[in-house]
Length: 187
Image (cartoon, rainbow, N blue to C red; front, side):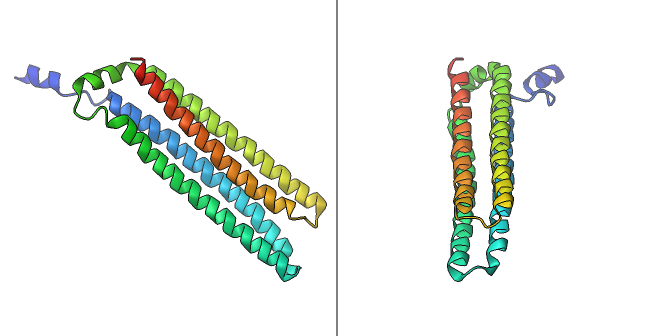
């Protein structure tokens, strides 16, 4: 009896394929969320620096700054909601075909190496894109310090940078989901 019972219980040190996929998707989306928070924080500091310099200007400039802060808050909200919905949709998309089917779960097991490779490539892409946009934001900050009295271009550039980052981050995550789907369709 002991022998038959030990064969049916999965070993704890060997994660199952569903757990591997869940961990991979969670890790990629957590990095994407952290990178998004970090970049949005950096752009927010940039906008706050502009607003701080504009405190002595007339009311139209202050209204423009308040409008820019509201747009940045909207971009943050949309990006966070999109990341959350994307995470849930990815999990539902990958786990609904495997619920209740032992055959689908068996074909799911052989892709651990490709899953790791796809996850690492996605993590590298997200880190690279975040670094590039942080450099762009730093260049805007540097130009702002040189120019001194900034035109509205810098506010617009900060908002475009934040929104472009959200779109490119979404593309990275969709590409990751396509790679995962391709990995498990080949099996």
